Length: 196
Image 1: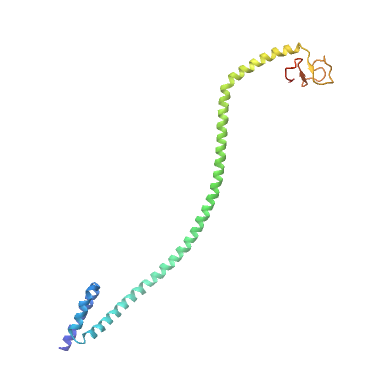
Image 2: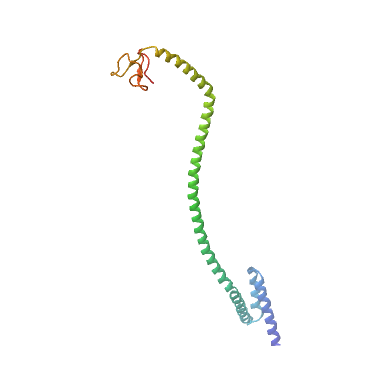
């Protein structure tokens, strides 16, 4: 009968341990009280059973850790490699950024130069267009001046010029002594000097 009680006690302890493991911690109190209420030395046997169960769980945890330890070590090694690769990549990105900034400065300078050239080109085109609009008036003005100039020239040839050069005689005509390029002043003092 003692074996029967022991077997019954062991089964009861197993049930209590499973209940403790599966239930919420707030409900553990009544379960533990039932251990102390059943038999006088039942709590010692329960403690032995609980220690055995704890050792069993510790072994399982250790096996699990040993099983995953190599994977953990491999993961740490891989992370260290990734870290060094990330540092290399960061250096490359920084270098590329620096080179892009330098190239961007050159492009910006060239773009500004192109903009200046385009503005000059536009201004020159506008000037040419405006001058072409003025061409008929300029041609007419030139024709009028040349006709007016021929009339003045014939009038001037009939007059005696007064030369600025003191070495020349007053009555001497232009071109006899110095040739073209000599400055002649008209006998009319209100007119400006003219070059020939």
